[in-house]
Image (tube, rainbow, N blue to C red; front, side, top):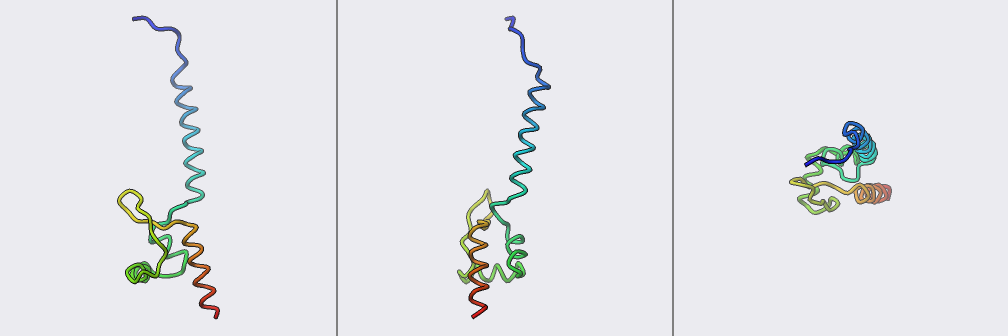
Length: 89
């Protein structure tokens, strides 16, 4: 069955790829979820110490992301600030 004229696929793919790359770069520049390693580095603790805090229920709540649990950036920052205020007392 004959079809009408089509838009060049290469152009459409290139535009779609550029949009995806721009979106990925913006997302990578501002992570909203942190791995345990990223969280530990942010708060200045070792991964082992963070795991101990998790087990004791003293670390911020984690969310399921795929098959991993991660920390929300906003909660991690608030936890860090609260910890710094407590240490200043």
